[in-house]
Length: 100
Image 1 (cartoon, rainbow, N blue to C red):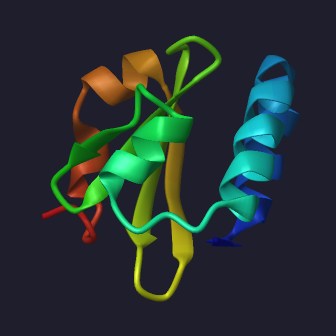
Image 2 (image 1 turned 30 degrees about the vertical axis):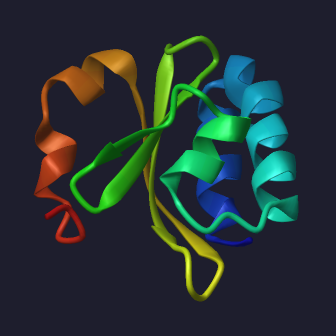
């Protein structure tokens, strides 16, 4: 899969250094994947959840949430946001125009 905006990952783990190894691990697995649907995503990340049109990954034992849009046909993952679990619970991230 082609990951759009790995800069977002880097900026996040610069702010939260404890998330770096988990995000790098996610990135490595996702880059080499050729997922065709959420079931295949869950084979690699069993805690991945579809939420509307987005896919949410738990990072570092659910401490952080990686919010993505996966275009299975074009094999692209668009990183929409990375937030703390507390921020996730506020549901403000659902204001993303890609959330449907």
